[in-house]
Amino acid sequence: MQAAIYDGKELLIKEVSNPKISDTQALIRVRAAGVCGTDLAIVNGSLQTPTPIILGHEFSGDVVEIGDDVDPKWLNKKVTSEINSNIDFNCFYCKQKQYTQCISRKALGIDIDGAFAEYIAVESYLLHEVPETISYEKATFIEPLAAAYQIFEMMPLEENDKTITIFGLGKLGLLITQIAFLKGLNLIVVDGSHKKLNLAKKFGAQHQINRFDGVNIADTIKTYTNGLGADIVVDATGNPLAVNDVLASCRTRGKIHIKSTHGVNTPINLTDLVVRELTLYSSRCGPFKKAINGLKSGEIEVEKLISKKFDLKDIKKALNFHMKNPEYIKAIIRI
Ligand SMILES: [Zn+2]
Image (cartoon, rainbow, N blue to C red):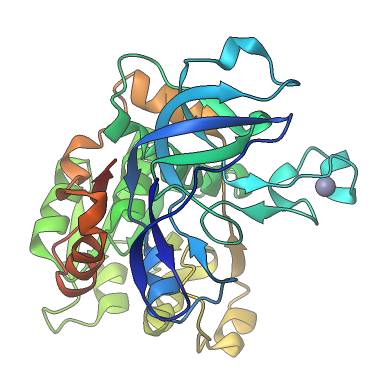
C-alpha cells in the first residue's frame, strides 16, 4: 500500500506492505484523513516521535477485515477511530474509565503508525460507527471536535462564566467557537486572519479582534467585559508566544484553558497567575459520541473549515500549504 512516512527528517510517500491485524484489531480502508497542527509539529521537528512512522490521526474509512475476537458487527461498517491505543484496561486511570490517559497508551499517528495510508490496523475498542449522513471528509472532524467538547468536560461552567475568549481560529478554535455559542456564552475571538474572524462571526462570535491591527488585545477585551477581562480564555493558537496575552485577557479568578500541543517550551508569567488566582485547565482527547451527535444533528458545521483537498501522493503540498498560508484552516487528504 501507499503510505506517508516520516523518517525523522522528512515526510515521504512509500510503498509498504499492508498492516497485519491481530485477533483484537480491525483493518480499515482509509478514505479521508485530516491534517492537524500535531502533524506539522512532528514534521517541523518540534514534537518528537519514534521513527519511521506513518502520520495521521483524524480519519475515516471502512472496516474490510476483522480479527477472530472482534464483534462481526464491525465488518463493512463506515467508521472513525479514537487515537489512544494499546490500552491495558488495568491501570489506575483505566480503573476510573479514564482510558485516554492509560499509562500504556500509544497514540495513532503520533506514537504508532497512523492513517496517512491506504490501510490502518486499529483495536476494535477504538471504533465508532459513522452515520451515513456524515461524509468521510466531514467524519475526519470527529476526533478534533471531540477534543473541543473535552474543554467543557474538564472545566464545567459556573454561574459567573458568561464570556469566553478564544485565541486562535484554526480548525480547533472554530469548533470551540461553535460549541461555546451553543452553550450560550458571549464570545470574543482573536486571530490574525480576517477570513477566519469573519467565519467565527458567522458562528456567533460577537467581537472579533485582529492581532495585527496594532491594538492591545487584553485592553480591548476589557472594554467588552466591564473592565474585568474574560471569565474564560482558551488558547488554541499553537503559538507559545500567545500565552502572555491569553493570561492578561483573563479576569481575576477566571479560567485559562490550554489546547495547544506544539511541543516547545512556553514562557508564562506565573506570578500573574498566582496573584490574580487564575485557574489553569488543559484538555486533550474527548467524547466521540458527543462529536458524532454534533455533526449528525447539524449543530456543528465543518464544511466551511475544509480549505482544500489533496490526494495522498501530494501530502507534502498539503503540509506546506498549512505552514505557509495563515488563511488556511484544514486540508483533507483523500485516500
Ligand atoms: Zn490503563
